[in-house]
Image (tube, rainbow over all chains, first blue to last red; front, side):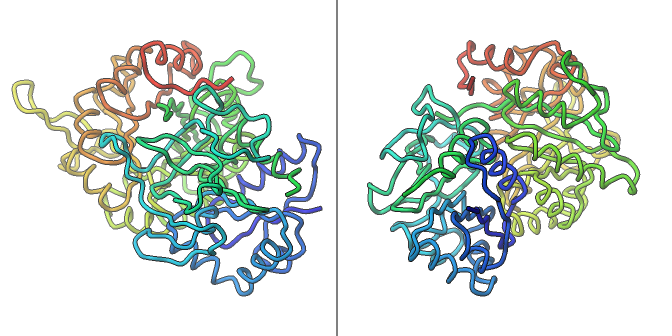
Length: 216
Length: 258
C-alpha cells in the first residue's frame, strides 16, 4: 500500500505530505506517503493525490511538463480506478476547462468549468480566504464522522476561482460565500476539495484519514 | 458561513521567539514551533512569523522553523521579514509556508509583487504596509508608507499604494499603523477602513491591540476581514479562544471549532 503525492512544481507539498503522514499514523491506516515526480511511482501507487497552488494555466503547464505524468494519471486513476484526491487547483484540474486569465483545457474527469467567484454581496473580498463551514449535497465516504452544516467544523479556503460542475450528482459539498461555492466534487473513484485539508486542522486530518481507507 | 480570522504574530530572530511567549504549559517559550502548536490548540485561525534576523548568515534559521512548524501544525502559516527575491518565496513555500508577506522589497521595487504573484499565485502574496498619519488634525486624513520599522518615510500615499500593489497581484494586505503599534490604544480605525474600502482583497488590521474591544472594532468599524495581534496573546492577557468568544458575542462570525 502506498500513496503518491504528485510533485509537478506546484505548491507546498511538504505540508500535504506531513498531513497525510500524520493522518495515516493516527488513523491506523499507516502506509508510505511518497512525494514524487515520476510517472512510474504514480502507476505503482495504490492512491494518488494531486495538489496544486497558483494559477490554473500554470498548474496545467506544470503537469504537462513532466513527461508521461498525465498518461500515468489517466491510466492509474481512470483505467485502473485507484482512489484519487485533488486538492485546490489539483481538484480544479479535473474540470473540462479553466477560465483563469485564459481558457485552459483541464483533464476532463468531472464535467464542468472553473470560473471566477462572483459573490452577490459586493463587500465580500476576493480571494475567498479563510475558514468556512461545509453544506452537504451528496453523501460521500470522505465525510464520514465529520460534523457539517452551519454548526459543523470549518475548512480553510484560499481561492478566487471555483469549480462549477455540470452534473449536480458530482457535487458533494458547498460553502456559502455570497452564494454557494463548490467545496468538494466527487465521482466514482475520484474526489477533490477546493479547500486545503492539510491546513484544515481536525476536519482536514479526518478527511485525509477517510480517503486513506476509502474503497470506492 | 465565512468567518473572521484572528492571527497571532510571532517575531522570530535567529530561529527563536523574541519576547518569549508566556504560556504556562510551554517547555521552551523561545521555540517558535512550541508557540505555534500552543496557538494552534488555542484556536488561532492562522499564524504569522515575522523573521527579524539581522545577519545574512542566520537567515536559514527561519526555513528550519517553518519546516518544523508545518510538521506539527496543520493550519495556515504566513511568513514575512526579509522576503526580497522569488527564490526567498520559493524556499519558504517549499518548507511549508502558505503565504509570504513582502514589505520593503515591494516599496523599493513594485515589479517584484507582480513577479511573485505571477509565479506563485495572488493567494500567497501578502503585501505588508506600514503606514503613519502625516496630515494635521484639521486636514483631511492622509497616511504615508514608512519602511524600516517606521523610521524611513517614502512619500507614498498609503491608500494609493495599497491599490497599486493589489493591481499588481497582492492577494491580501497586512496593514500596520505605525502610530498605534505597541501603544495598546487600538487599531487606527480610520486608516484601516480607508484601505479596506479601497481594495477588493482581504485586509488584516494590525498595530495597537490592547483589549478585545479593539479587535471587534477592527472588523466592525475598520472593515478588516482579519485581525493580527502579538503581545496581548503572548503575555497571556487573553487567550485566542477568549478573544474569539468575545468577538462572537459582539455579533461577529467566528470559527469556534472544539
